[in-house]
Amino acid sequence: MIMRFPEGYDTVISGNGFQPSGGQKQLLGLARAYYGGPAFVILDEPNASLDTDGEQILFGALKRAAAAGIATIVVTQRLSLLHHVDKVLVLKSGQVDAYGDPADVMPGKLVRPVPNKAS
Image (cartoon, rainbow, N blue to C red; front, side):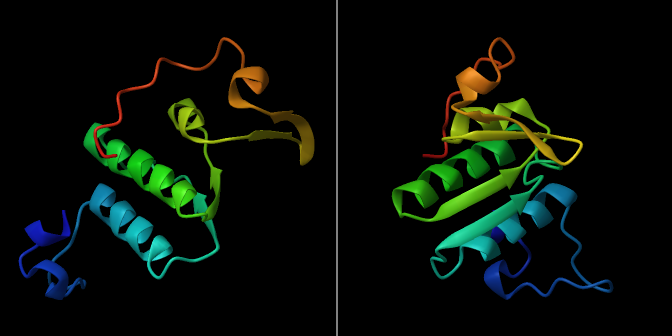
């Protein structure tokens, strides 16, 4: 995706120059979050502006991060992400309402996962 920008990695992103879409901005933020191999990353609504292809990139990044030993916390309202996490914590009014494996915490609410093309 970055290589499709006008100058690839050298593209200047500014108010007066190139303006990426909302999804492109989110994927750039995702790349920056994992750059350098951090031990821990928190992603807040990482797929809010992503289309199906962008979500596949996100799902692949989560899988690669886990394989690399990077712990990731994802804050989301989209159930599609639950197929790509190990545990789910549900908060209600600031209190823990449920915690555990996604299928146990959200029985019957998980939609069938889309095949991951970005692995």
